Image (cartoon, rainbow, N blue to C red; front, side, top):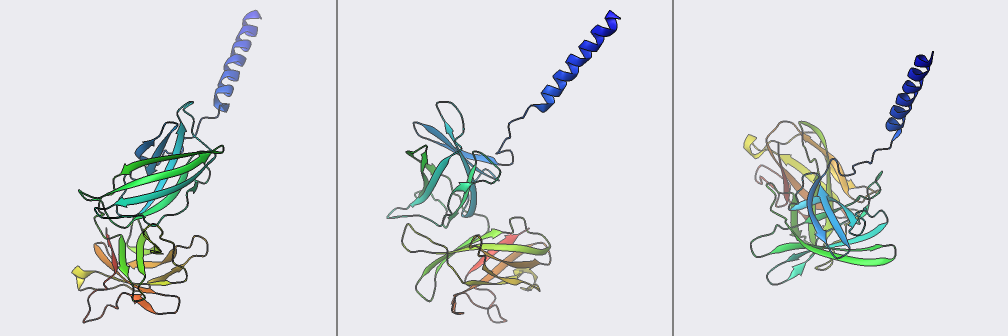
Length: 280
């Protein structure tokens, strides 16, 4: 009987131990699906930058970041963050279109936003990124040089409209185009000054996708992009009927229905002067 009693106690201990182990809450890796771009650093914090690819490039970039306190190696969960990219040219400096930096949903320490780099770096000109942020009422700043190479295909278009305004259009989706009707989205911005590029409201982006290598044929059932009241970006439908290289010809229409830039594709005009490129 004693042997049976001891065996019962042993089984109870093992079962309780296993139950306790299974009930432990494992920490969530909030950057499991992201790749680190680089780490920025000041005396108090390390700021880790992430994206889906681990790189930045000319055009629209969705960027994630988190701030680590050097003293205890814990990630900050209550920061308020502003950022400012700056292109250091040979004779002048300018910024670029940006979003606010907000907490990534369902995370504790991860923040996100987007930056549109309208031009790529070159051997004599480069981008830097400055973060001004506050934690528990204390203000901090960190600045670092960042790498922004040219994109392989055109993902951003910069031009001056007939109204004299300088515009920046950047394609966001489809990031992975397919033979189907794709959701297409873009940001439409204007330059107020060298450091301020707000979103443009109430415009329309007219699209005409063409395959130059296939007789410049188009596709049916495309839907022009209009602005969303939620995030103020522009959304439409893009029908890609086969794989290959596509030129997405654009016309920008203002809130009065006037075309401020871009031309219709006709038998005598093969392409608009403003366009985006996709290849898959």
